[in-house]
Image (cartoon, rainbow over all chains, first blue to last red; front, side):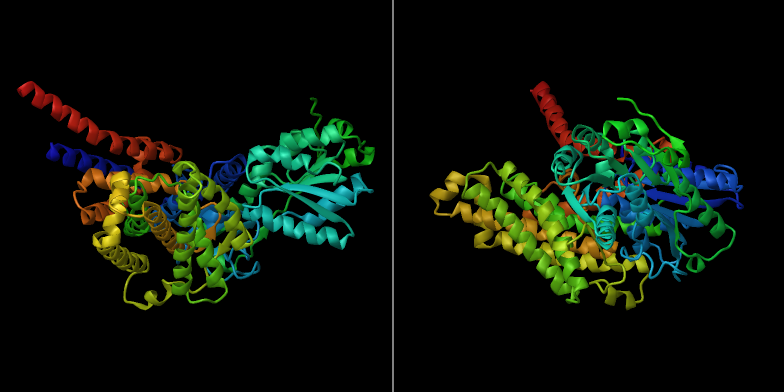
Length: 324
Length: 300
């Protein structure tokens, strides 16, 4: 019995070795993400597609390894060790916890992070310019100033801006702190409502009624997962809801000057390709989003008691009309 | 098929979760107290240690403070149960939920990076060892010290009183044992160990994150039960060794699962694999005895 188990184990091990045998000219890129989530999955797909367009085809001259930690930090740590141990050419770490775990495990392997809002605060890099060590990447820090310009253009009278956010999400908290500071500089006020899980989003949005003239949502994962709850409150109470990402406009937000996480992934993939071609990550500045697109939803605006101007609609890259 | 780094990484994480399994052994096995506080006390230990470390406190002192914080959390759960008569499982859920807010308050934000800070591991990197071997060495020492101390404690008069409390509370009370105090002490001790694990985990991972407690209870239970399946826990010392062995086996299984592409397994199957492993570990010993029972009956 024990012998048979041993033989089966050895057999599978040999099989694994056989499948792992690679052609010498094959480059290896290892990609890890903290959890499966539409935005993070889009980043992964973007990285793949960009690499393919740059001439690195998975299964051909490139081998892509991909693991998700399913939201579990101990598994994230084991994924990091697995990747570092296999010595890939580049490791891509999607979202802050994965990137930190990878930074703790990788000494020399180049690491490119993606979908990290505050890489300096997360101690991934010492500075955004020429970070120096083996780590660089793309930050999804929002262009808050442009977003507030848009908000003021649509609702010039709004002085109290409400937001719903998850105080347990590092990226969201960094954005809310920044938002508060920038709004104060414009003589405006931020009204915060906390929701630690999706089931609390509706209650948090309701608490903003009467306290906020408009609602602005960051790229908070918890809130965006349940964004319909905020939209419904906005429609009932005539409070226009603005979003930071364009996908949310299709779900009923008035407007967003945002970027697509798929494009974010493409930008990450371009950095990976440069490293595969010999660039040193320590010399590469941390990049931020370079393409912003305006999405508007005039029908949603009507339901929230405002009318979008014709010139705003003509400026939009995409006009979505969600009917509900 | 496992690289050296992945192998040592599995041992390292296994050793940390061995401490969690010690804690769960005390609550579930010794006291018969199903305690879910650990999902909150693990990040609590990480939070306390991280905040103190970035304030410049000596990392060992910070880790000690994490143990005390964990013990406090456990004591709250036990007091809810003993003093307010709240069902033990529910009492632990209440503390666990509360700890999420407490942890956010302690940290002031959801994530504190320790990547560039001095931790308990820093001085050890000067040893002539490979980078990934250092945490394994240090955590082995910590686990050994913990094991010896717990073993001695369980043999002491207080330890015996605690075991009696879990085995038969009415009898224990009749013998003059203050069972309430034993429950408070035991659950506090258990969560102190989990807080220690959280503090060490944050220091080896480079960050404390408020979400890092998710699933700690399941992994701890998987380690405890898996260890018991491998090593029959006929004595306290065997049970403690089983905790560590179980935690390491569990981590090696995860590391293998991460390498199991050839079996058609994918990343998203990991949680399922965990559930299957735990179920098997719980069910298999029972099946073995019932099969054995049937055979003996047939013979007779």
